[in-house]
Length: 113
Image (tube, rainbow, N blue to C red; front, top):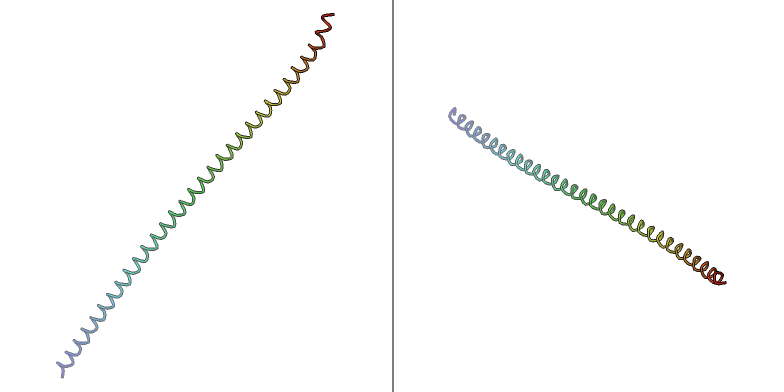
């Protein structure tokens, strides 16, 4: 009877060891899953960070483009102002020449007399 009890105890201990081993395996598998999940989250965070950096770079390029367009518009405006002033000077010159011609045309017959 004692041998039977010892044998049953050994069987129970063996079953317990098997259950503990299975539990350890499950815990190990869970740890692996958690570790892989953390790796995936880390990769996702890296991708999001790279995307944010790309968006930031795109925004910087757009701002630079806007600045260039603004500078171009300023240069065009300055050019238009210079052309307008030049045209004003030309009109004044033409007015002066016309007045001179008028004076000369009036004065010339008087000189002949």
